[in-house]
Length: 458
Image 1 (cartoon, rainbow, N blue to C red):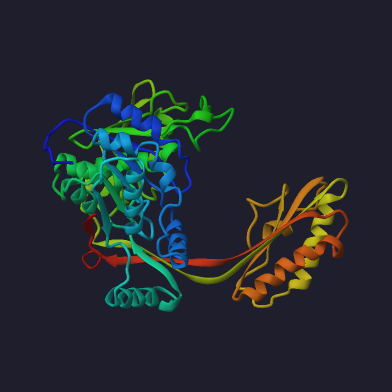
Image 2 (cartoon, rainbow, N blue to C red):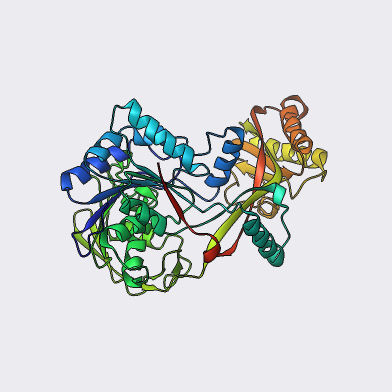
C-alpha cells in the first residue's frame, strides 16, 4: 500500500473479533470490498487478554505453534482474492509466534498455487531482553508483590499502528502482528493510505474509533447486542461483519457486508462505541488519546452509520504491558441432580465437599455454584450462596472450583466430586472434572522508548 496524501477514502473490513470467531465471516466482507472497489484492507482481530498467554504456552509445547489455531481456516477462503485484488490483510493472528504464522501464510499460498505473497512480521511487543525484564520486575515490585522471572509465561506491551503502517508502505500483502492495540489494526492502514503525521491527533483519533467499532467483529452489526423483546436484530443466524469507510479527515461510515443478517444503526454503533471506554473523553491508546465527548453518530442510510467529530490528544508516553505468570492449578468439578428435592440434594453435596476438602493448600475459597439457582450472579466467597434461601429447583447442576498451589491438591478436588456418585446424596450423575494450569495477570505501564516496533519482510 503506497502513501496517497489526500486521496480517496479507505475501506477497512473486519473478519474476526476474537480467537475462535467464525471462519466463514471473511468471504462476504471480501466480496463487498471487491464490489465497492478502491483502496481496501481486511483485518483480523484475534487476541483477547489471555489469548496471547495461552498461545505462549502452546509455543512452549511446539516451537512452530503459538499463533492463531484457525489461521488456515480464516485465510483459505479469501487469500487468493485478496492477493488478486490487492487487498492487504492485517491481523494480530501471529499471537506468540508471528514468524511461524508468516510461514504458515506463505505455505497456504503455495498450497493454493498463488503468487508468493510479501508477508511482514511486526515484532517488538514481547518484553524478553534482560534490560526490559529487569525494569519490568522493578515496576511490578513497586506496585505490589514481586513476580519471579521464571514464573512469567509472557510479558507484552500493546504496540501502536506505526509498525503496521511501515509494513504496508513497504508493499506487504499480509501483515502479521503479535500484541498491538485492537484499534491500531485499523489506524495502521489509515496511516499508510493517507500519510498522516504521527501527531495529527484528530485524524488519528477518528481512525482509532473506527477501529474500535470494527474490533469486535459482528458486535457492531447486532451480534452480542441482540436481546429479544428489547433489542431486536433481524436474521442473527447470518449476522454480518462490519466495514468502515474512513475519510481523509478521520471520520468514518460503518456498514455491514452484502447479503448478511444483523443490523447497523445508531444503537448498535453507540453501544460498541462505548465498549470498554472508562472515560469517553480520554480513551488511551498507543497512537492517541481519543475523545468522543463531542462526537456525532448519525444514520445515513439503511445499515449505514456515520461517526464524526472525534477529537484527539497527545498519545501517552507509556505503553500498557500485560504480564502473565504461573499461578497454580485450577480444579473444577460438576455433578447434576434432578427431580423432587434436587436443590436440597445439591446443597447437601456442596456441604460434603466443603467439609472433606477443608483448606488444604488452596490459594483461595472453594467456589460453589448451583447452576440453575445461583452461578453467574454468585461470588467466590459464597456470600451470595449463603444468603439465598433453599428453594425447590428440580434441575440443578452443582459446580465447585478452587485454585491450588500444586497439582496434587487440584486432583483431590476432582476425586471428591467423582466420589459423590455413591458417597453423596441420591441421584447424582453426569460428573465432569477438569484440572488445568492457571495463569495470573498483572498490568503496568512500560516506557514507550524501550519497546519499539520492528518490521521484517519475508
